[in-house]
Length: 282
Figure 1 (tube, rainbow, N blue to C red):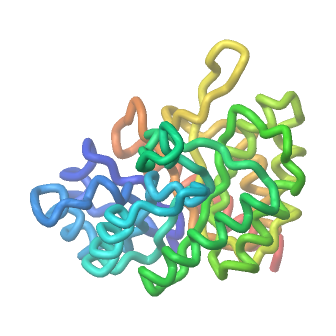
Figure 2 (cartoon, rainbow, N blue to C red):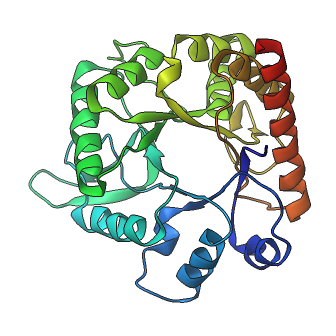
């Protein structure tokens, strides 16, 4: 049974529809399909005829203290009603704030890291609940690759997400590549640190897992989704599958996009790891 999916990006629109390979689902960035019509939306509707679709957003900015962009939320609502996706997700980040006090909020066009504090948790809960009430469905919230930490962090990151899920009723999108990237950049053992995070998460909250590649950029590694999944991430994934069991898993690839067969090979690898974990747990 194929449960691993692939990110469906524009270079693969035609070949996926022509070949219709066996993958568990396809995932697209929601904002690319906010128009009322046009070729992109028509292609997505054709894809939905053959595969479950997961809508993964990058623009809700769920951690923004100024609240949500109503236009963005209304467009997402219309897309959800049209496509009926298997999952809807976005990131635990902020991006909206006024340039000066009293001015309208602007979007920073980035996934900026939130502080892990009680105040930030209250903001996240309020915004996530507003999204879920509007969409009339649960959404999944993804942990972020972050290149800084806030001085007032006071809640362990994994516990922050547990509390978010408990209080808002949302589910979690567990990005294992982000965990490994953060650990490397913080000078920690990436496999051990990421596995500790996984072990601290309530398994009942996890709705989807993301796997991707990263690249070295000087003294840091960057979550660029531009290569095959690296071995430390596969190690964490094996541990995660043994702990959580089969969870829908996505291969993300957003830069230097290769031939479709490369993504399918990565998805088959994920399916094989899931199958091995099932045998160990049996």
